[in-house]
Image (cartoon, rainbow, N blue to C red; front, side, top):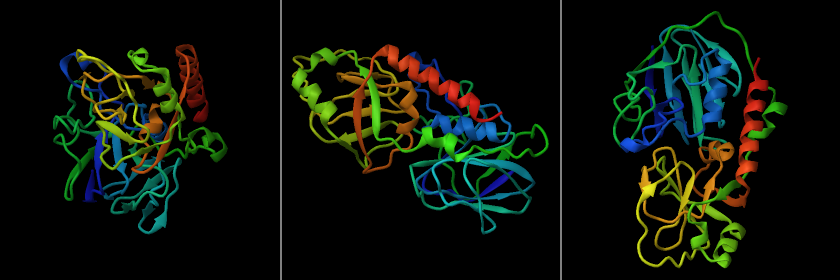
Length: 308
């Protein structure tokens, strides 16, 4: 077990989410940066979908009751074990009674704590992920708080040191260009408005959360007459509500929407959304569906070469 000494700003239990329940009104939830969670789990010998802790902007303090094998992935939160620094992207042993402490982020938005055996919580629709908006999944459907105790699953074997070379992690370096495909209502927008969208640098606002990333920048003029009928929406869809400031639908997005969508962030860049902080700036680059599929395939091939 691990005890929560302090939860940080917003720490939740997350796996890779629950796919296929959109028709029931349940968005996938899951890790905001799935690449980091997958790699962290592989570093400790877990299946990629094992549940870990997702920390946002400010990390927590965790006391381990027994020996464990752990890894940190994602953004650098300046982690220490009993005062000694712990690096990212490497597995490490922690003894019973020791304390893992994380501070404010030094790089992106989220850091993942993966522990051999995974975090054990009651599954909701086959997933351990916390769905904050509905109060389901994770630990009582909420973010962690001081005094919580988390159960760890059975470890799969002895400690094996694993790491990822910094040169191999170059693909995870910050990149503020998000690649997108054309959205289902892209032809509703005048060409001049779409040109402005792709030429503009947008800033992530403080109102952003796991439901959606709200951007501010050049307003997108849709010149849409009448009212759009609500339809199903997907993660990464870019909606344009009244006022023209775009919103990128995120892991806990509503499953239907009535705003036009000029573009959609591609799957290979979706993890980058999870590392965007308020006031970060992004631009958009259009690619074809064929390019998006090729980029996703290349990313998967790269992932499986990282850790043997």
